[in-house]
Image (cartoon, rainbow, N blue to C red; front, side, top):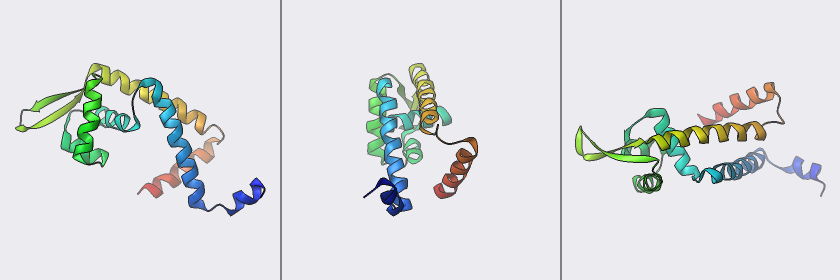
Length: 141
């Protein structure tokens, strides 16, 4: 079957998932030189955006189980990107904070992801980018 015929047979969902897989693959490639996983990258971004927080809050922001959050934070702490602190308001709770190295890594991730997006969306003109962004925002909510 010709590519044009096959493309015409693809459903919107199939095309969407194909693009999502391509973007996910690109993200792995982009983060590899930084030495961080996509999950760790998300945690760093949340901490950069919202500041110091409890592990439970981080779990909520990441929408993952607390046990998984602990594993992500363990990996980041091993690399010196975050530190755990006792919560002065509740001795049983632990706070997570980015270190200076974590903040520098967050900036490196942001720059790398921006460059990745520019390459990925280079085939779209400004109007198409705005339209795609608007549609994706609608679908996200």
